[in-house]
Image (tube, rainbow, N blue to C red; front, side, top):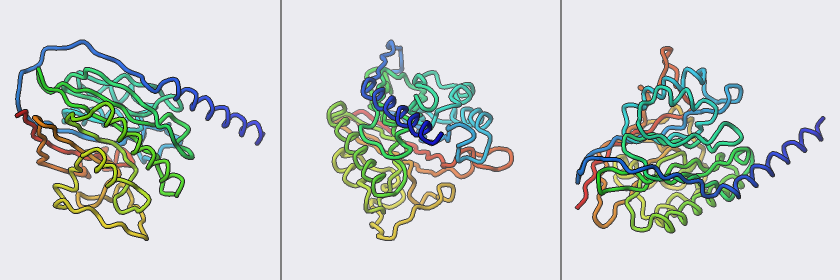
Length: 306
């Protein structure tokens, strides 16, 4: 029996890697729509790992189907939302989310990447790109990142990225995660050069962990971290040789989250972050239990085209 199970696991991993190679550029272009011809505005954005693995293996404390319905309803408060681990309960999540523009769900475990974007602004194009390197249990689903072009007004678009990087803080996991961020940085260079950007997702990385390459990623992409700017006055956490990640549900605005919101301006387009919040209140059920094993990160930004 052990050998049969081992063989099945090997075949599954081979299938997933083969499937990744065939689906590096999954894309969709939606028809243009009429939108307001604005030159400035404000947007509320959210990134949230919704713990959508099957109930039996989910790390969240609450029932997944009802939790997803509650989460979907709460997401209506935000203009643009990136979620991760949206695997097995997408229909429940989307059933209560009223955003007119949603990316098409890729599938349950082990076929989907768990990445979904919901937007009140038109999504003109999106692509899903799997990581070229993974480690351990992260290889059991085709995790990666997505590229989305969002239309803020009649003549103004931005590029939005959603991601879920390799998890865990072992040496090999961190090596895979560094490769993930380097792959994303190269893709941004190749496809979003000199474009205004929002990059939101579960980085599974910390500035304070010496094996991670977050600062290098920001330098390569010219991205800025809203948390660093608004809560730390531009000062990065010092690398800690004894680093140990905090429990994800114990975080506050002043502690670093795996879930990050990054932005980049362009020659004529400017983002100005005005608000950052690790939400410890809204995303709970009637028993005051967190709806996921992560806390949602909420950011407000002003934008203007000059």
